[in-house]
Image 1 (cartoon, helix red, strand yellow):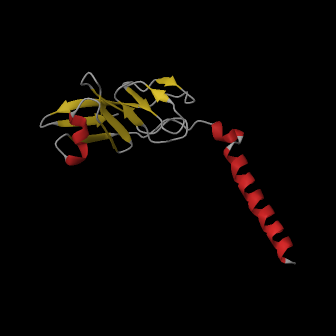
Image 2: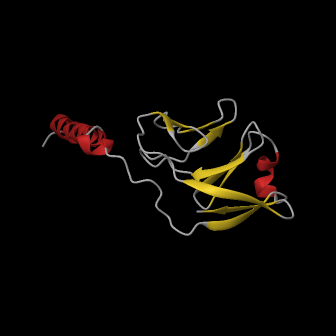
Length: 142
C-alpha cells in the first residue's frame, strides 16, 4: 500500500467513525425522556450558616445537595426540586430573574413547583417539602 492510498483509507475510516457518532446522537432513541428522579426517602438538613450554603441566605440564591436543587425565590420562600432535567438529565440552574429552574443543555424551563413551562421536557420535576428548622437550618424531605 502506497502512502496516498494509506491516507485515503485512514481518512475514510475517520470519516465513517465521525458520521456514525453524529448519527447516533440524532437517532430517535435519544428523544426518550428519562423517568423523573424517583429517589425515595429524601430527608436531609441544609445549614444556612455553612460556607457551602451561603447562597441560600439571599433571594435568588440556590445550592444543589443530594441531587436536589434548593433555592430561595424572589419572594423569600425556600423551594426544593430534583436537580436533573427530566429530558436528558442535565443539572439545572435557578434563574432568579425569571423565578424558574432552567436546563442549560436543552433550554427546558420549570416553575418553582417543578411544572414544565417550556420543553422539550414534558415531565415535571419531583418537588420536595422544605421546613425551616431551628438554628438557621432547612429540612428537605420527600
